[in-house]
Amino acid sequence: MAINKNAFIRYQALDKCFSNPGRKYYWEDLLSACNKALLDFDGNSAGIQRRQLFDDLTFMQSDQGWSIPLEKHKDGKRIYYRYFKKDFSINNQPLNETETNQIKSALLILSKFKGMPQFDWVSEITAKITSGLDLEDGQSDIISFDTNPYLKGLDFLAELFNSIHYKKVLKIKYETFKGDHFEYELHPYYLKQFNNRWFLFAYNKNVDKLSNLAIDRIVELKEIKKKFITNKTIDFSEYFEDIIGVTKPDNVKPLKIELLFSMEEGPYVITKPIHGSQKKIKQDKNGLLISIEVIPNYELEKLILSFGEKVKVLSPEILRLQIGKRLKKSSNLYQ
Image (cartoon, rainbow, N blue to C red):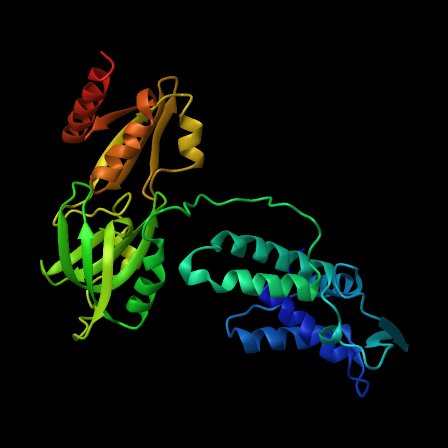
């Protein structure tokens, strides 16, 4: 059982009630205390009902909780609740089993960021928490993330992050894969990871527009003393909604694209949609027909080609022909 924020608030409220020897708390009082605490935290909270209250009591008394010393006192036909240990509080107890497992899970996830420059603190804090709370149990890793610690340019991430946060103007030397060298004045706005590569989105003073640069192609960067041009037009929480990847052509609107997947590939595409706009048109013996609405770009073409013979572009015609040309060129390599 995971302890979420609302549950933690309820446990704290109950702990205060059980610790108060000057008042008798019946179940109605406990429920009222929990709901008041929830409402104080979130004005829109609907509170809990009697059943949840008693589930909370059961959890707090369990080994997964804090094994609280709860005592029931009869008062006529009613019952009130109180700790029989006067100095007991869940805040004074060692971590319970649930909390320990949650910390282990969090540390496991954090460990995957080790080695990245902006997460230098992870190794230190992980060691401190692990030793201080005796969390070592010989458990080997049980989860991994798709990361590339050998990617060039990772050492620039921390500086780019700080430049965005503190609104610093940068001069960047950049080398394309063709070997061409450029120097840009950039006002950095956003970092995004795609396909195990990091990309910087920044206002490019040289071309007077937003530019997208692969971090692994940056050769050198330094801060320059110029007035930062603040981003007032682009909402990056929405910027990528109409594309797959990071390339967004100027003045191009999304197109409805229809793709026919084979019967074998269909289930994978249903469980892992290729874009948020994906809609199933039909599924029969011919396969799965879906539509997406995106702006065509290089990443879209690469994604379609990655499915090989298991997908066919039905529309628009311009994309169908483009994919056909690419496949013919690929086939010619094996002639």
